[in-house]
Length: 443
Ligand code: PLP
Image (cartoon, rainbow, N blue to C red):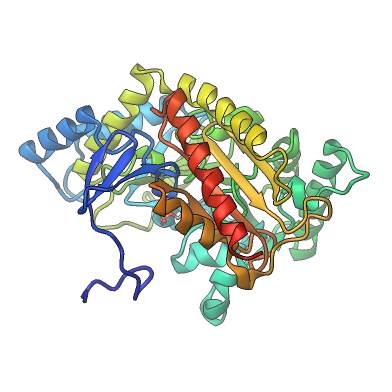
């Protein structure tokens, strides 16, 4: 019996009572390797003493002060650090409590920017199918996951969707990467023209697609071409790095690898590593100056924005990542993870694709590798793998509907940045056993 309205009700969840490095310990003492960081959150594992001490110090000094009255030292220092490390002129950081809040703020900033600029006709948002930008109404509306949106369609704002840069599923056999990227950029341009050349406010995309399609990196040059189309029509580029940002791909900001700078960038998850709920929206000088030079303030706000304790936690997380040079480990261990996975599953006809960047890896499962035919959704292959892995003390992040929101199965791996060589081996070993058991159970 529980009075908690759980995410998945009527399932008996174990009670998590402790954390030890990359493991979570339940109330029976069982240990689970957190190979997905929950949902790509826990990048420092579950017991980082420096972060725990920073939180204690902040709570001792002052847990919270409303941002209508005060700023706080950790908020100032964290914002300065993010502005300094972010690409281009993304120098202004709006601090929030999670990913969806960051996306809502991004959408409203884009809209207010155009209102201040004297272009109130710009009201359309274009995003991509098979994207996820959060569950609040604005973020859900622009997200491209059909299943998540469906019950709420009548109450969602209008949004438009184009083809994702999902090479395994969307790139034609006779098409080069370059031609594929060009086709997608042309599609975006056609959509902008269809909606009205001066009517689109922003194009929104995850730099590396996370939950809905499973760690899908863009092909080379894709974002450069997208940036050019946006610039041609004065459309803002919003990159959502809530899952893939803050070091997950081996770069603090995933878009650095693509050589593009967005106008607005959202981050969360790895920002606070799960030690506190935190998110942020970064904007360029141009957007900040237009809004602040116009009506003087951004017409938005939340009670807990820039919460002092969350700021202290996130600041320390970011210091640990830099001082312990953890991004080097993300790159090395990421390469190891993908290569061990490829070796282990080389002869498994049900592993269709292994993809990703850094310690952000997606494995797509298929009925047939040759035809890329997915499993029937009723088999719930991804959920079976999650459950077989969990039995074996391994957490992986499963998802169905990889292809179109209904069919397709993948699991996502996003282990903490502190994961060691031998822990990578153990993760893959347990995953292999789980995959064999799950797929074996339906054949
Ligand atoms: N955007 C992306 C890319 C995400 O992966 C997520 C969460 O998974 C969100 C937005 C929403 O973040 P939150 O769950 O913190 O509201």
